[in-house]
Image (cartoon, rainbow, N blue to C red; front, side, top):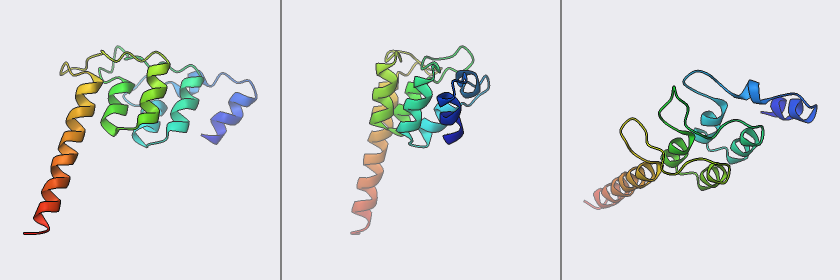
Length: 116
């Protein structure tokens, strides 16, 4: 990411370098990697936070799955749509709640199991 920052400081158009037309992107990698500062940098370069036509899983869905509040706030404050739906018609909030309910259930199960 340091190379992208240097290029941006030199006036290069890093948006084209950071956008990806395939299944993954620097933005989704930063979100899934828990790198909110990188998410902020990528968004500041003008990379879209909206759902693409080829991918039905928006960056906000990804941030919700990984539960990173800083990335979620960054995406929402830069135009991400909280009501966007994926292929299974779930919003990012559905993912956030479902993932964290399962984590809590598993944590409780393993905690209780350790006493049996």
